[in-house]
Length: 310
Image 1 (cartoon, helix red, strand yellow):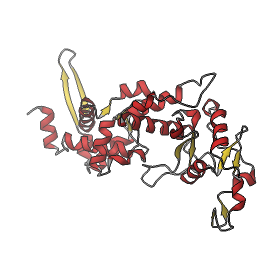
Image 2 (cartoon, one colour; image 1 turned 120 degrees about the horizontal axis):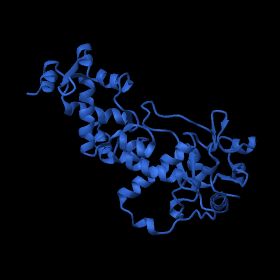
Image 3 (cartoon, one colour; image 1 turned 30 degrees about the horizontal axis):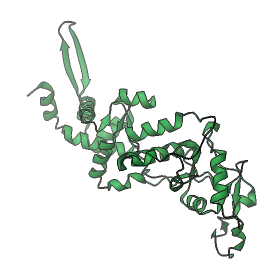
Image 4 (cartoon, rainbow, N blue to C red; image 1 turned 90 degrees about the vertical axis):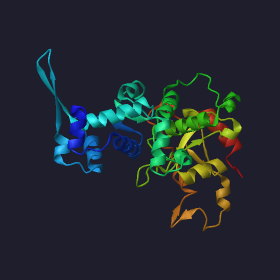
């Protein structure tokens, strides 16, 4: 048994496989990414807490002598165990190393891959089908989201896609859809563009807002930033069925059918959910980056084809 193995056994440290499982769960709890395991990092303490490690287990060091330099090197045993577990997960392509993540996000973090995400959901007894509802990053989805964010808008933008994307596999379509959602709701700072609602679930796995297509997929609307809006669930539905449109000055336009509604409809307590945007003549909550604002042609198509004019 090696010196390191002896130390792990003597201190009754958790096994590497136990740490690996915990890392995958922690990554889900942190929306898919955690920082490097540096001294003083909160994540190092948080994972140690899940194992109820005592002070000796957290503070013990391995000591190695470099004979050529006659130098003593000390490395924290708990940090080393964490790194070895993460490194093994990276070798199995369940997470990406900070060096690889940095190339994509400019942040030195460990990040879940799709395979690691699936493994983590299994450990948490969460069906994989829930991935479309959860806001947890994976490397593959982040790649799609980044491409959507950084692509420059063509001078003659056409918001309709060709039929070529329909040949994609279900897996690729799922990743593309989640990448679109991530890019849109991050651009809008997780707020509903119509009412400004911004809130997540108690476990922070889900956001209330959804990514809405202005021109729907069924009409070959593109999965890009200019054909998307971040909308809460109610206003997503209301926009899709034609209660709302958006005019060239990015003002919210309400269907004239709203005047036919009985007095007890479209209200929550005394708050008028349907009619208030027109009453206040308010504009959208838009991304801070104007290059990510919705496209006029897409909005015009929605006004002409979806908004119920009456």
